[in-house]
Amino acid sequence: MKQQDSIIISARDYYGPLHNINNFWEREDGYEIYHTWPEHLSTVNKGFIYLLKCRPGLILSISKQYPTASFSLYFKEKEDSTCIHFSFFLGNGYHVLRRHNQAQDINFDSNQGYVIYKLNSRGGRLNYPTEPFCTIGVLVEPWFISRFWEGATGEFALNLQDVLADKAAGGYFKTSLSMLPGINVCLNEILGCPYTDARRQLFLESKALELLTLSFDQLNPQKGKGFSGFEMTPGSRNFIHEARDIMIADIKNPPSLTELSRMVGVNRTTLGQHFRKVYGVTIFDYLRIYRLEESRRLLRAGKRSVTEVALEVGYSQQATFTREFKKYFGRNPSDYFS
Image (cartoon, helix red, strand yellow):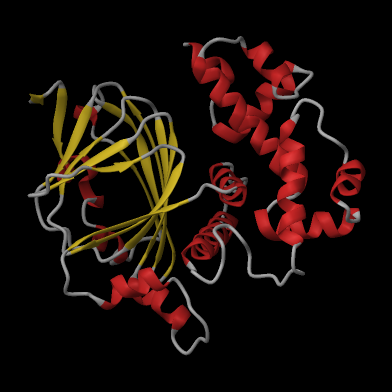
């Protein structure tokens, strides 16, 4: 049936055996599952969900969806899962959640990360975008996270600790995670996993733990968002940010590493090491990611051709630009004109 031009689908019907994640925890016939949408829903959405049990208490999920119509999932029952979700939404649209008996919508923007924890939540309705999108998530049992701060000194993700301590409370906890270059790189390494044999589990597990580490950095009040825990000399972050600003001011013709280090007054080694400690990637990996993100913004505006965009962000060869764009986003630049 339709309501406000949106098809309403039962979440139980949509997810099938994955509707209750506890069923997957308890499976004894394998550590991974690949689920495609039911055939009778193919006129609404196509795609898949892949779940991997990395270790007890830790699941990695990868979902790619290609909606062909506007639709909403209806979660009727109280949700039994106790997992904390570290979710990263990639794509062009955004999700809107309307919880039962709540007047305020909860928005999930594209190209944004979130920590989500449902405390005795009774579900609601989730409106999906009509654009293709991908979601990568790390599902973690509370005990798995709690062990990180048991007996540890210092503060660790205090807002998340407070939520977990109030287990009887009802509600919906959500906090945003910035899509820093380190997280973007990790997400794309997951999507580009080079292994199809037993090494796949080891590779994906390492990336799931890396996403958790990068996310915890942003939940720790002792650190600035996105900064690593390495000790740096006073004022070092100032020259790192200055170097970044200089580099992206002219992405078509950025200075060399030698020129950049001279402009901010430190040697190449110091600049390179400290930049990676703060942003999680090398200087020129950051520049590459920035160029690709800017190119997508320009393509979405629809005022330039692929060749013009490639040149504007610093690629002299369209073929090179197209290859790197597809590797990073999973789509060709020309898809934005179709």
